[in-house]
Image 1 (cartoon, rainbow, N blue to C red):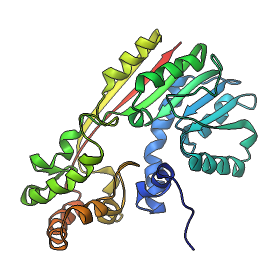
Image 2 (image 1 turned 90 degrees about the vertical axis):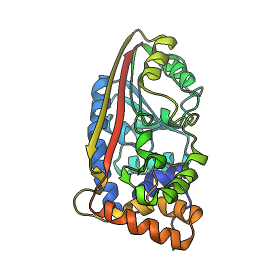
Image 3 (image 1 turned 180 degrees about the horizontal axis):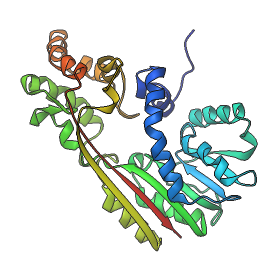
Length: 301
């Protein structure tokens, strides 16, 4: 029996990000927990407060805040995906906390369903990277916060690692593809057509833009922490597990195809065979360069 039909956001968050492998999903969740805890720590959540998680997804941050706001607190999960809100509501019912949660269908840059000065805390994790109007989103965060309210944000800074995905340099997804660079360039072109490096919301900003937006909308006490790492190997493919199959069947974000889909679109069968023959052993030996950068921003109204 076929599974439920979901929108692109729910499909990615619940399935395509992990290549449909529940084990990889659990592994990735363990990787996210420290980020969640840091976001909540920076938010300085207090008992009895109203907590808004924007782009709540499957509720990782929002449900993590339940104990912090206590029985008298209120949790609002907002998202642009009704499917994800339905999924989060189902989880809340299973945890017997649905009566303490509200579910709001809304984009980050239009929270008009919420009144001015109506919440104490706003959090996001990897949400603004999908928002074209980031300045407008900050304006909305500021508007809905009460005086003394806090924002606590986490965003990947993908501009940092663009070079790691540049097949023209012979380095694709962190792997040395020099012998098959002609093929890698064509595969990469599939992704760049969907997400141009200079204009896509995931790639056209950095941590300084986040700080500027926070200042310009009116936040006065602002803190920013930026971290960049260049490592050997990919944490997702380390240790036991189907590294090649995961790379082949997972998607890096909701907008883009899997590597398998991109290869099928860009290459002929014999070219896929040549590309795979070179790349697969590198993946299985985890011979990649990892490049990543993230920013935490927290501020008080």
